Length: 158
Image (cartoon, rainbow, N blue to C red; front, side, top):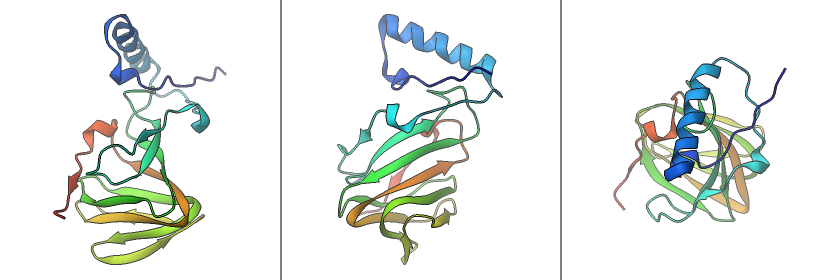
């Protein structure tokens, strides 16, 4: 069986590269339902530049803009020591699954520990934010959507 690895950043391409991205998207639609292999080490590290989000960075694994997948956005969030994802809401539910380090996820004002092996379910439209511990934090996150762009973040007033 053929294994496919995604090509990061397709949605940001223009010109000839944009044409290639459109061809990839068309191919992705034809391949929907086929297994997809993604190596996290090959994914670009995004984020960390928009102060509205905090200092969180992430690597997108599955997203219909980049992979021939649907109904799931999956990625790895990465935080340095004390890093943050500021309090926010969005319509779809979300899950976090701790990979490395530790931190606190505050959901509707209640603090919850996150660490390796701990899973958190966050219902849609509830306020939540993250603060990483002294050793930093990595967790897997996912949304029941085709594309990350379909998740509208609404940040709480500071």
